[in-house]
Amino acid sequence: MDISWVTERIALGGGIWNSKNMEELAQLGVTHVVDMQIEFDDRPLAEPFGVQVLWNPTDDDFLPKPPELLKRGVDFVVAALADPGAKVYIHCAAGVHRAPMMTLAVLCSLGWDIDLAMELIESRRLVVDFADVYVESVRKFLE
Image 1 (cartoon, rainbow, N blue to C red):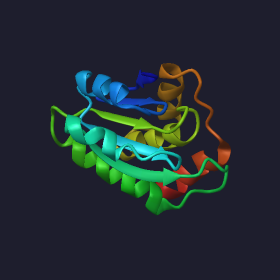
Image 2: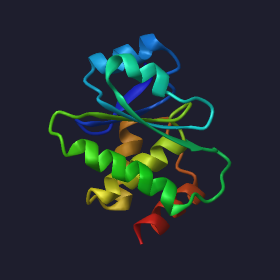
Image 3: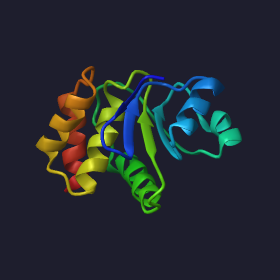
Image 4: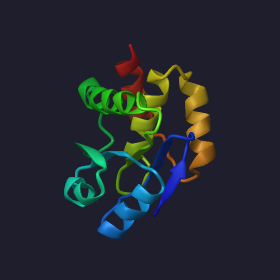
């Protein structure tokens, strides 16, 4: 699995794609998944493992993302993290643009400064590329 732990309870990465990878996530303690892929819906893969999935399909088209898109993901993660045993995996196809954008929105919603959150994410996942338009989408969401 292509997974990078950003915090003890929030991970970021690339596509899950198959049952074996979903099983590996479940064994790592992942209880919730935010799937930012427009290309693939993880819900059928997650069912046998009791992992809850928010399919939040997002085009990686370098266009501004609406606040509602980020709110759906943030609300799902914040609700999940209310359970002290929950761990969340946020992903897109490669874990380079869409999932980092959502992870940034989540961390900022949990009280992180946006610049410090970006530094943390980039330090934990070296392939992250924060597109300016996606960072601006997070800033607008936070307003």
